[in-house]
Image (tube, rainbow, N blue to C red):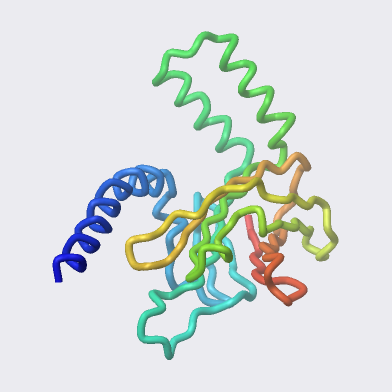
Amino acid sequence: MKKIIVISGFFLVCLLATFPLQLKSQETVSDELRVKEWIDGQTITVFNHPTTRVFGETYDKNSMRNYHIPVTNIGYKDLGQLKGETREKAKAENWPEEKLTKELQNLKSGAKGGRLYVYIEREDNDRARANYFFVVFRDKNDDEFYRSNVDKNVPEFGDFGFWSNYFVIDIPEEVEFPFFVYVNDRHSSNLSDVKFEILE
């Protein structure tokens, strides 16, 4: 009995020690990306851009403890939004004019087509590793115009027993609305896993 109490206490200490770090990191993810029930055919406005989920892996409604896992959500910000946020940050932090100019130039060259934000939740740690994902961008005719691998981001253990991850992708090519975004998992046997349409 003593051993059980000691072991339980040890795990509790570990949990309490890591929770603040997890919470701090989780707070960087916008609430707009945490939608649990984004079903196929549904349009949700994220970051002021209406976005339709065309198809994707859905959670098991028969599971007693799925908490709507898996979750794959996206949000998009155009270049104008990114520039506006950069100017606001520069003003709040009192940047020198040279730094602001450089940051705006970097956005114009590296994120000409805006920035994509991806948030995922999975039941297993391995399924939430960012480097197993890649994203394909296609125009309104479904012709590919950009593709990006994802850097390695370690998943976080969530409050309800799931693993989550979050990553951003700058789009160096100009985009025309509407366009499609495919978020694909290399662990999957599907040709495409989750498809979204960003309408405007």
